Image 1 (cartoon, rainbow, N blue to C red):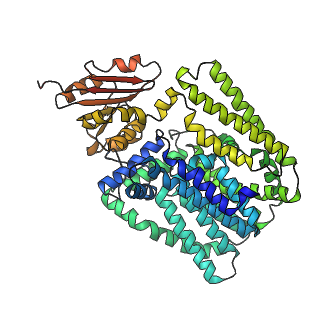
Image 2: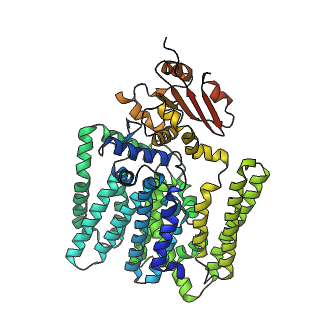
Image 3: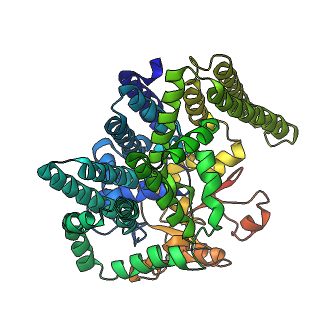
Length: 549
């Protein structure tokens, strides 16, 4: 149990989640988008209306951007600063997991195991070092439901009242991060549980207090953004809630069963223990605390499964109760000295390691790793071998090496960005190519990009917002339809005419993500570029000014 010691957990969190944050470029499209929104918030000194590329961006409320922007304002416009709020939110969620485990079972070792399990869930760890708003939403929902548990367990009226106030404040902050879904998630857990416990009247008495506090927390910004951008709430409510939940045209549409494999894969490297934990929890569902965790796990899962639009990050909230239930089962196995399920988990991890090794062999044979990707392939091989050896150790010494599962997962995630082929890296992390021509691109009077995520990265790297989109508006369609978006979108087939017109005013930079067969995409661009740099999937061209007509 050495790795579950609280001090070592803190050191592990610093080493695994904090120190590597600045070691890799931003990923497209999420990281570049959220980092650029935060940069523009600081540059514009506008903490009310979110903007991307200088355009109104009403996909989310402003709360999550506040933390990202505050980090960039304090620490500079760097990858580390941009990712720090996400990592800290993940760490805060892990702390709340430990506190809730202590409340439920009053056992420090089980609490430490719960924290370790939570931080080593594949989905939690992956999102914990990647810029999205879901870890921030999750920490507020975790705090709200911890406060709810305090409220329903305490016999002291003042404590109960304070807990409902904290619940409301946490829901208010969750609303500022991702909107009405924060309130829905808290209600979806609290209402069924109180109905089952025949305490719904208590919810009706104290719930309005939480609602009032949540409204008070959210109201100042909600009113301010309505004053500055009156159409914000109309767009946000209908587009981001109603359409995403129910419309057949929702983004990221997926079948109802989508989250079942996401939940299973997200539990790696503890997947082999999940059946034991699930069976134990179901057999004890009559226990009030176990029922609370089961409702917390299942209600959001069913809610998001019913929605048309689906992304894996949406069910991050489900991994808090999953970690608690799994940790309780795991601690029980360790205390009793039972090894059957520990070996079963090791067997699953061993199978994963063998699949990774076989996949690397296949990738090498098929030429997916080219001559320039030798180092990346070696790193991937070392990681796969380490995973396999740690799984073997877990199977051979299950009571001593069980926590090797967490070490393997963290090693895999730490090395994952360095196993990309050059082609994939230039497509998903193209910062190096942009920086190679940063001087010319900053000096260009106009810049054209063919992908919204790439446009955001170009803007973030060059510290400029006047980037023109080419071929597709994507999620910037709403902002482009406003007066500030006039002339900011170049349709497919119009690039040559646009570049020729812009060259009469000054130099023009072009940054494009291109398909593997890039001939057709580049044929649409006119000749005359002083620089033409095609590096795998990234193309950069610099056109000098032409003589005025």
